[in-house]
Length: 347
Image (cartoon, rainbow, N blue to C red; front, top):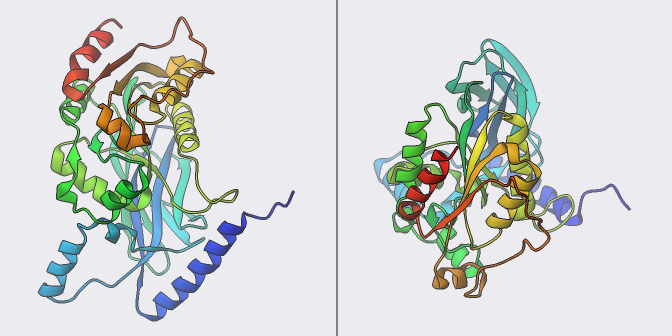
């Protein structure tokens, strides 16, 4: 077998290099989009992406038009990644250089240079970009409680991943037309208020390009902000498409490794693979799971989610474990809230 990357990935790299060269000539500018990372007293995980973007409009009319168009989903996909960009990372007077991957993504762990617990910031820049600050939620060593949440159909009613509906929601519909799942914001806010300093981390198969929209959506609807572990559309080194379940498996495994003292309450929905993925993780690492909460979709939502009115069952290979963490199910956050309160009260 060849060690060369998949042909689709190689073709994508050639295409991106040509597009980047052409857009630089047209005056597009190099920019770092910082994403919220997380960490502990030992290390921090820094996330972001190096992209080319059009220059900012210079007149009030163009700025107003740009603000309106930015609410259309397709604008989230206009940035062009800069492969293998060199990025300077500065924190607590310490600077080191890292390299973005072939799609411009920054995902690196560094030793914590002395950042205290709480929301901190790390400076990022390239030789051709302005300095930006990447937020990092440093979790105290005393914290043993946290929330992991899916996004699509768990906190946002998007009816993903049906292809045409997904494309319509992601590329055309304005942000104001997207709806939150009732009660989830209240539930998350209450849990975090009861556990000060606890992290909330969103793990989703959604594209990194939607990060700005998600941040604005969360703020508008009162969902707690926290790191988002998203994925990238397009070819990989091994195939044409990325595996959503594998992305979530890896993300959960990394969270267990990076924050070993935290026991998670895991939120998902039964429209796709969340129940089986969470059960699999709980069976393998029960010491990292406090409880599992699954939002139950209606029959109509099940049809839109995967084409049938029945709940998917892809966990036949799993074996029940006597010490498995409790699992609750409900229609929305208001339905899940009292059930979860009872479960957590039991220890």
